[in-house]
Structures are given as C-alpha cells and as structure tokens.
Length: 456
Image 1 (cartoon, one colour):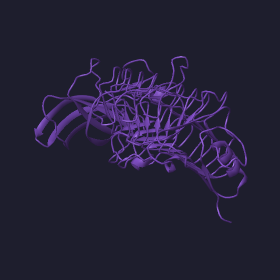
Image 2: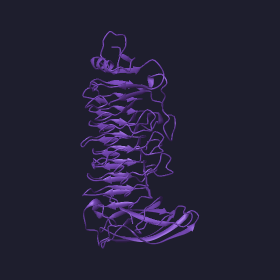
Image 3: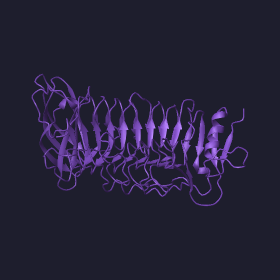
Image 4: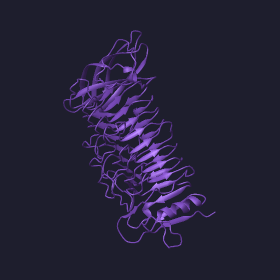
C-alpha cells in the first residue's frame, strides 16, 4: 500500500477533525492508525521558531514513523565538524504537559526516526524508547532553540529501554545536543544491548564551547551519560564518531554494565579539544559490570579525558577486566586512573589482591632517555601475576602529577612482556616516538588475557 504522509500545519495542540489544519497530536494519532512506516512533516505558516506548547502528554507512538522537523521552512541541518550550526524551528515545550515524555516510542514503533526537533521542559524524558531499530538524529534535547540555555527535561534527554537503537551517527548533520537534563543526557537501561551512540554533544551548548550540564546534585546517581546495559558502542574509531561529554554535574560517563566500548570521545574538553569544560566529577567512572573497553590498541580508539574535577577514570566496587588503552589522560584534578577510588594503590608482591580491576600492579620505571628526535628508550620492570602476559603502554606528559604517579597525555608506544615464575619481568625498549622538551614518562600494565590496567 502507499505509505502515508501527514503534515503538521498548526502549533495549536488540538484534536479538531475537519477544521482544515493538522496538529502534531492529530498527526501522531493518524500515523498510529496507518500501516507501514509513515511520515510526519511540518508546514506551519510564518517565519521563525514554531513552539508547540503541549497541554498533555502526546499519544504514545505505536507504529513506525519518521518525524522530520527539518521539513519546516527555515530549518537546516548542522554543517560544522566542530560545533553545531543547525537551525531548528520546531520546538516541543512540555511545561504544561503534566507527567509526560516529549515523545514516547512505544511497542510497535520499531524502525522509527526522530530528527530535527527541539524537545525541552517535559517532566519525564525528552524521548523514551521502548522499541527497536530506531534512529534519533539531529535533535536538541534539553536546551532552548538557540542551543545555549538550560531548558532541561525532568529525567533523561533520551532513555533507551529497548535493544538496537542508534543515537547520532558520524555524519555532522546527525549530531544531537543532549544537555541540561536533570538526570542523564542519554541513558541505556540495565539489560539493554546493541545501542550505538555517536557524534553527539552531551552537557554543552550547541557549539561545544560552554557547559549546559546534565545531572543534578539532588540525584547523586545522575551523570552526563549512563551505560547501564551491555555492549553499547559509545563513540568509535572513525572521524566524527566520537561524542563530546563535558560540563556535566557529578561526572561524565557512568558505566554500570558489561562489555561496553568507549572509543574516540572527548571527555571534559571543549568541542575542539583545546580547552577544558570540566565534568564535575570523574571523566569516566565504572561502578559495576566487567570487561568494558576504554580506548583500545588501534588508531582512533583512544579517548581524550582531561580537565575533570576528579579522576580521569575511576573504577570502584568489584568491576574487573576493564581494558584502558591508548587514551590521552591529563589535567584532571585526581589521578589519571584510580582503582577503588582511594588514591594511589601500592604494588604488592605477585599481585594477589582483588577489588577494582583486581588492583593491578603498575610498572616501575628506572629511566627514560631521548635517543634521537624520533626515538626514546625506556627501562623498567613489573612484578605481578606469575607466568602471565602483559601489554606495557608508555605515555609522556609535560606536567608532573603531584602524586608522582602521573597522568599520560601523549601515547608513546608499548611492549609486550611475560612475567617469570616469581612474577617478575624487566623491560628495556626503544620506541619510535617524539618527545619535545622536558617531559615526564608514565606507564600502564594491562594483563593480556584479562585486560586489567592502572597508571603509575
């Protein structure tokens, strides 16, 4: 059959069949009644931003639909690689809607797309997702129509309560701004899998130059992002896939699930990565789950985690198997990586202890010597689990950490080692790397078959 298109022609929140105009409420009702994937466009007369002031919750969306705010005259998608110059002229205001989500993708709405909307001031979520294979792109959720003011929703910007949804992509036109919300900018619920979150600004204004915080001190479990499910891809190794997570209250990225992958993001910086917009807490904190990957061994996988007002990365409780590889971590108030949230964890013979990442021992460096403009020699040792393989990564930083267990701003390279029966291994490696000016070198140890890591 022919798929239906419904065009919204009024800002009035009414259901007056036969009056010659169509409200958003009427369009959703009609799309729910139609089979197939239908389209809701906008053609509201007059210039400027069209604010739809909802008088009650919109109907739950129960069929596949494309709701496209960019069809309204005067709208345009973002064209910037750094910043967001989109012009969004359809705004959903939930101030008068009572207990309501902005949009609710309910059962049966699988395969929907929401794009080009400003969604703010709802008492619950900007978008609640209870169906699969949906695409949420090019929206501003929790800010005003200029992308600068905090008009946050009362809970999350977006809540994922179903599998296999995509929030943003590497395309600049698909960037969402998810800021100002009272809980998370984006939340993945426990048990949810297959979520992809890429290219978004979370906790800043649309240009990525100032904080518009998600989270609230009244809710100590809130943060910029919550990855409570398993196997979420947050960011990516290719250009444009990384998210900006900065300016949030309590912390940046909160991980409480397993197997999540965090690649290529800026956490605590501005959109250009040149200055700080601190998260008020750790950049990344892992409170549950296991085997998460923060950065990786391949190009583009490392995150920049800087300027946060607590640790760069903090792992607590009994979370283990978390790989922390190839990141640029610097200028955080606390440690670069803190296991158990208790400051520097001392080494112990044969590394028998448990806790966060099993409190992996760190390498001890003896010397770091510049051999030439492109080579540096590093000598040191590691004592840890006997007869085990480790990846030792090396970093430089122009500033020395006050704990003498420094952060690592610039990745230099790695060496693979194997401990002997006494848990010891020495290394003397020359890396192809450039160190300009006085620098401090640090190292991490990652158990190759269990991916435990920590900073020296």
